[in-house]
Image (cartoon, rainbow, N blue to C red; front, side, top):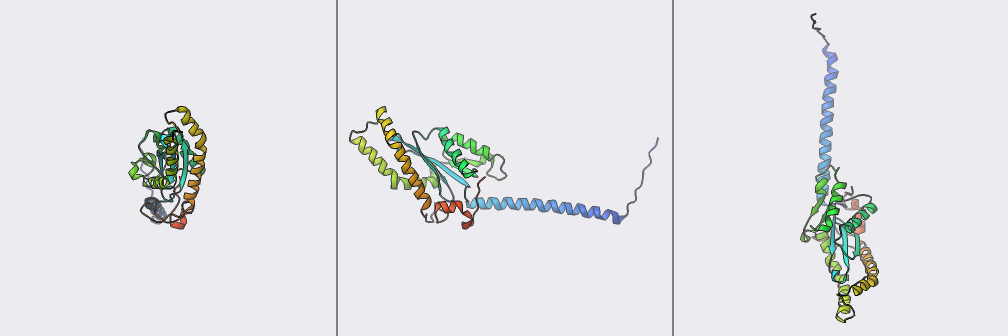
Length: 250
């Protein structure tokens, strides 16, 4: 059985709407593509300028470690707001550092775009958590790029704070404990003495750190090579729009 071709002669005026619709669809798709590309570029340019919660800088402070007190802190790179400042027996435990990190993520209701810390074994867990939380991001800092190991010399935001803390507060504690040691009141080789020192002063030191954090976050920082804007850290952190910036919390 032979088939016979059927010639469908559709008038040109009836084909015209179909052609117009296809052109409009292509134009629409092109506009959407350009719009998405433009939004991504704007986001990346804004982030490169440095916005709130774009990068959290984490680091440990070991100047009081000889006396059994290790301090760990986190700071927002843009506003220089201290996120946490905690004393522990050791700041080299990955689970302890991850606890601080997750604790503030819960407070902030989100994670930063990036995290900087040094290449220490205690930071591996935080690196994994951050990369996991940013695994579905659309930007160039998502996934494994959400975390970066940097030397202390490149982690200037928190190193600048540690320098200020040493001058204004921790030097007093160092001198105090050294006086106890040099007066033969404190024997650092004795486990009993070290336990007694922790029992007597850990809460006092934490209370002092809380006051330092409160003061730092409420004082005005002058513009410098380490400070993008002059202003009060708490104000800059919670109101980035007043400084022409946005919140990058993920």
